Image 1 (cartoon, rainbow, N blue to C red):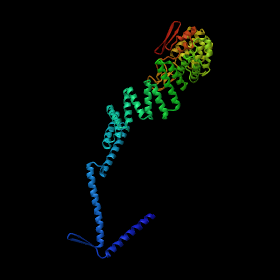
Image 2: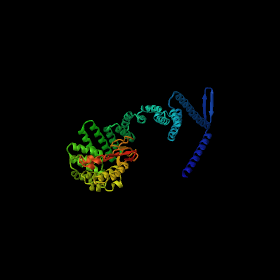
Image 3: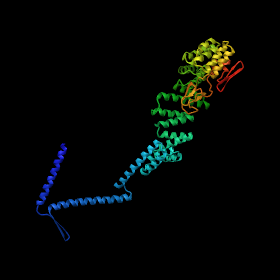
Length: 491
């Protein structure tokens, strides 16, 4: 309010001053005389002031016109001018509008619209680092892989877009199944942007598929370094890679180095069953049974597994059944309620011909959690206790159709594997195998019932011999064979 009043006062004062000035000029005697050649102009003071103002305005307008003429000439010549900047702003506005519409078309799945908008954006913007990616995505969406590849190759020429080009070509090679080229491109992309999580995962998966365990461990270390992987997960997966590396070294005929690598894998993840087994066998080969037992007991405490029991049996392969039961207490005192522990105790007592103790150890497992292995053990116990052939056959018939029990199952695709692998054979998932009950629809896989001979050794026990001849698909009883055919028992 006060400022408005001040502006009004100033305006009135200016008008008053101009009026006073005009009055003074009108009352002033004399004037201005201008002679040009033979012509003379006489102006009064007020007229002279007005003429001076008009002259200044005319000169200003002439300068503006002259500047426009100079700018037009420079514009025609290709130099940057206000006119060129005006048209540039207009082109940018149209280009960015086309770019935005193209991105919306990509998001909505309209490939043809996206292609046309990308071409329009390129025409107006002339910025390939922005429009080439849109063009490549639109080409891929429309199924024009060749066009997309050409655009990605153009992106390789600019350092700012090189990573995008490498990544795009890498994805195309993966879709084509060219994993060798894709791996090289993944390594290049990883070198350009080591923090990029997707590139890390792709490279790690390809290295695991190609058995490049040393390279995979470096990539895994980068994931930990850049915060893309929790420390506990890194430790577990590093152990998986170390174990795989040890198996590779073993195949190359270097058992000593393989033992060291297996022990390192077991140190990183003591609950990894294959690592514990391999490390224990390495200690056994080195004449260090106590170290082997310590490794196996620790792994059994985390997760009981038949392979652990088999390796524990190899520590003293020539002991008697009674001695074996006593030594196995180091294992069986851990996880005593676990089905694997109960079946192991039953097997040990069957080998010692202590069938009542074997039945006690097995308990209600054949009824509460019936599996082929549990029912096979029950049949061996019944045979050892003198049950009739009819009863034993009935139990074996139940074993044929019973669930197979825990297996190495991929948690991503539910594919069942006969043995542990670092990479799933079906979906190429890394470190996805878990020891758990297999889906019933899967095919036949060894259940671990064949572990019995490994645990009991060569004890000459008839019931044990019967149990040894009971694989997953065939059970033998007194020379008669009970076979599994299409998952249905047949005598």
